[in-house]
Image: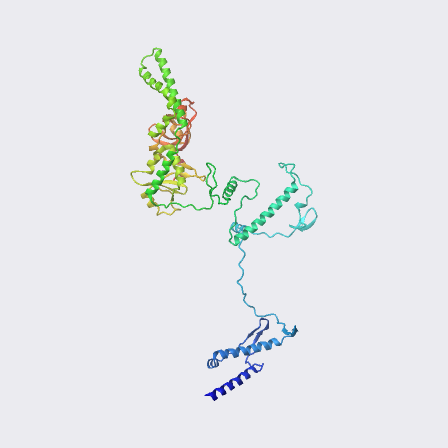
Length: 346
Length: 180
């Protein structure tokens, strides 16, 4: 057993040495295809399945890989070599095999706000020529940019518009407008980027405008109100100030068919509150009452006078007239209370 | 279709109470069944519970009208009464104006009521009080707003306006396509 094992070991050593000294030439039925640029070798030889099954699979694969690598290295050595810092270096040729890209293809840039709008409206870009004829200089010039045709910024004189302030510097105004346009453009560009990355875009306070509309001002007020450390929680509102509308908050509604009794109770509560808020003293009503009493008094006086003159058959009229006469004294005192009494009755 | 919000309910009740005062309560709390207000395409409908349940079968786009239209909410969230609400306003009206037969037609064509056409008016009507307009035969014709108080009415000249026109039953023909 021991002798056998020694023989085995010796044989193995012998085999190992043979492996190591395996010649650098490898025989293949078909030549390999090489792409030295990618350090790639393609072996098109048929693999003998019986060989693969008989041998140990790992060993078979290892020897195959070793042979093919040897061929690849032989191929590399065919290229010119040079010595850089005591190391032999080969300059590989350009790779010929097209490899699939490592990273996924980049997504198309999300459309800007304008592009979305243009698509919605069907606005298409019109190609314009780069050069236009400049009448003043009698030559072809750029449509835009440096040395452009019809350059508004190169004017040495600007006419003051009829309705403008004569002391206003028109040049400074033009520069300012240009700066504002540039700033607005930059701002929109950043907003587009933020929108594309789905970041939260902060609301604009009040963009510069020549004339602010009512809605814009209301919006500015609303923004100013919530721009406190406590997000406007403790901000007092003016009397009769209306709650801001269209703030983006979704309203919640009761279901169409819900609790009818509850709904009724709620409406009755609203009516109750409305009733209690009615002014105790309705001034117009009181004044009307006063006016009416005065009218009746005057009428009674007239009737009395006519009765005194000797007309008969107005006894009942006098009786009627005397009642409001008595009431007149009370009217001044009871003026305020009467409407209330009336309301209570209703 | 949806129930009114509290704010909308308040706006509508305030408008209704100009005509029928606290009788609004009688519309909400009815002994003969459950009635409710529902908003559908900015219009307020007064519907019985039974009818409402039937109406839920109809999709929102297809539903034109259900129950009685009381009026509509404007885009600034004000409430406008429609003539269709007259059937519920007339029985509870607190302040009434009767129109002489000669002025009936003029009112039904959408004109204001002049002093000359005024038959009777409820005592103590204040200025700008909502009033229901009747013919002398006690047929409700519409509603409006008193331009003058009862007292002032006695003194003004016959051609001055005493009631501003708001709605009249002539609208059933004139505005047939928009009334629901």
